[in-house]
Length: 285
Ligand code: PDD
Image (cartoon, rainbow, N blue to C red):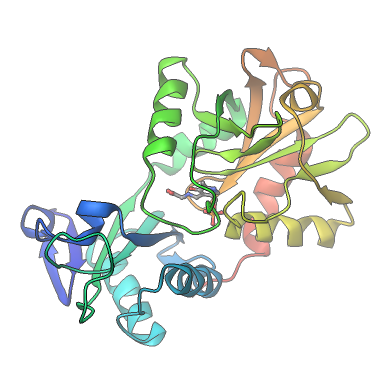
């Protein structure tokens, strides 16, 4: 079955789903995106993902090209046409097509919008969670606004490649003071030997993850205490547990950081428990 993408008002097979060469997303990474989990053919936390999309668009002054109600129809229709039961739906909005010039084109072109969806291997994802993943650390070389979900992801791409070449699944990005900001495509968490769950505050230095918000709700429901503060690599390596969160992998236990085992080197019970409970705290549409 050929995959179908929504591109500026049309559903097309991927091979015909194209964007003009002067799209500002292509020329300048002048656009933003969202990734929503799809579970049992429904979207997970669409409302919060769309709220973050609206915020990202506002921060870069791109207008929402269609009402959220219409966008919701497109997201669901793209999932349906690709027969995705479990996977992700991807949405990208750029400033549109215009002759290459750095400043915003005037008059503003229609923003370009692309939606794709794909299935993931549920069995493989569960296996990875029971095994845990290795993480390596890389200097955080991104711009000062990672809170905007911009398609400008070159530092994240390079960090992830360093991880891959080191046999790790994720790179944790380290700020100038030696604190972990977040993963190349996830938020970072530790549980200290005192049982304190720690994650960095969602200020401008990280993306305010939707899965992060769901996990905070799950912890509050469990009565687990947590602290939002920066933590160092040494603290993470000495932690009892570590994990990452992202829409594409929910809660994923981390079992080593820069080659040092975290705790006993196996996925921790709190991370696995939060993974099991995750969808009880998420919204389905
Ligand atoms: N990435 N931090 C970064 C840098 C991310 O790219 C992501 C998600 C997150 C987690 O956000 P959320 O819980 O809302 O997915 C944090 C997506 C999955 C991606 O780029 O594929």
